[in-house]
Image (tube, each protein chain N blue to C red):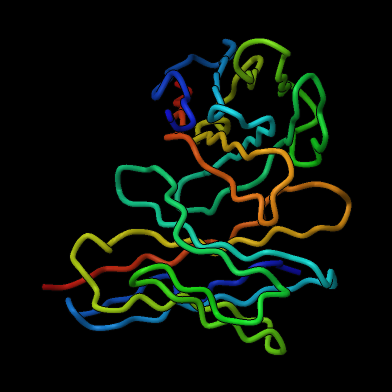
Length: 116
Length: 115
């Protein structure tokens, strides 16, 4: 079974509007972390936001917020006031504490296009 | 504070040659991770190393691939006798020891093309 599922291969949004990128995860570990990364066409991986499984509040970082619904195992990324520079691939990733490995498991990504 | 550095940024090899990819972690970081990204795919974990130790190599192909992180110098991902299917972007990430969330900082990647 996939650990991280991003069901939206592509999304379109008008400039200045908000957009939600979906991410669901699967784990039996009570302690885990969820990450979102942005990959523009230039190829680098840019960290956006982190949510710990025990965090009481949803994470926010500037225009990025994470809609964390633990019971549903979802960690959707919300980008407010979209900008043209937000056009990129977005990857959701999970780190589990079990086994001592710190590896990240990534979803297949969502390609976001911001239209002027 | 320099970020994670990878070199070369682009590497072209012919089938059967060896590829060596280098990664210098951020200053103060002692954990290094290698990931591979095939075209149109997400990143796939390969190996997790600390200084002089391989902690988790569950994502490494059993043959032709090896990784090291010596006491001095960068981490090296080595691919022997490359094949066309090895063409991909290889990302290195680093994180500090400890920390509550162990955020991984990524390098710019090395794009390997096998002719």
